[in-house]
Image (cartoon, rainbow, N blue to C red):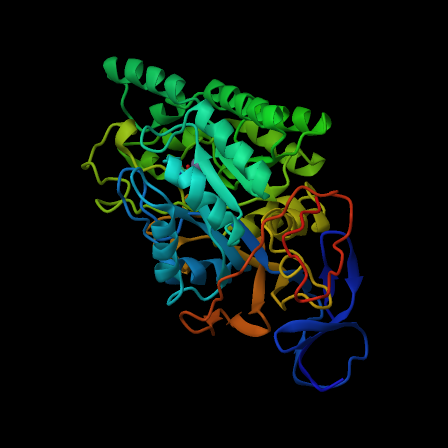
Length: 487
Ligand code: URP
Ligand code: ZN
Ligand code: ZN
């Protein structure tokens, strides 16, 4: 074999399935060999005492995206991708979001224009479908799926985004036919609006009432309804940002019945509670997101769901709005809870939070951590085995973790374009020391090494339903169908 470009020597390699002592040899951006005594290379990295993990895949983040209120997120594709890289995430899948009246083709073009010159990590796009017109359903969406935009999110809430049940059935059936994955924001819009109306009429308008209006019943009802709609047309469905034990149980029940239902949860449902919104003045606005963080019991249940397989994916739902007039306070210095931009940041701390509290405190195994933060998202969204695994032939996207590195989270150490973090002051053990993407160094010595715009758009393929237990036909063939879903 020609000399390797890079060897990572002496580390502990952990994938979703197993953990081994192995050196990793990298050539031309891909993993060329795993083993010991790999010979020489242009560079050898000593990883003794370190964990060598697949780079994270964050499959839910809002980057350089307009909200339904018309607010731009604070992170563009440069600051968002840099922040992701420092937290060990080497691929992400933000949204190309359609607002009513827009052509899907146009929003995809815009998303490429935004990401291409800026992203330092590799990326793909989920679509957001909010206006399923005849043109969209008959032409644009099937054509985009065939072009590889094989995952999209729909909303059951937010007046400007939500679709009705009939539209949802149309979309699920179309996804079933063309091999796409539907993701759903499941909250009952009428329940939220009814509760909000009564709260505001009574003068209860502080940030903490955001959590009251987005009652757990709104989430569990919509989750069960979405699952039943998917059952009707035998479609795959992934319920995003699950916050309640009831919605989680709905997913688990459905999976136990053999339905192709998947679940995602996020850091805010493990580390924050509704009490965080109950602070002086507008401070609580920093924690307003939808669904909202719940209580300690819900946190515990969600941890269990990560452990017992109710959830397949752990994403950030990074939706960054600064605590100023450009973001959280865009409707004035004292907006009612209804007018506070929804969303919290979390791209950079997603993996360290889960590693520290989950792996080091015994709530999750190391392999489960890898599955939840990287491998499963790659499988579900058509990026596997190119991404999400340390295997011969895969892209050399690797985070070398120091499991003993203790740091206290503060906004000043993060690389996003935010002015606060909801996790300020948390003590975290375990961070990536060195992060590679396709064999090139992204982050080393707490310094960014990658060029602006050096991330690649990841081509995907639609993935018709297949036997989820089967191995990919030719996993090492670069031309293989990376869309195969194998959970
Ligand atoms: O509050 C949140 N999660 N905002 C981001 C948009 C969404 O629904 O994911
Ligand atoms: Zn959502
Ligand atoms: Zn989101």
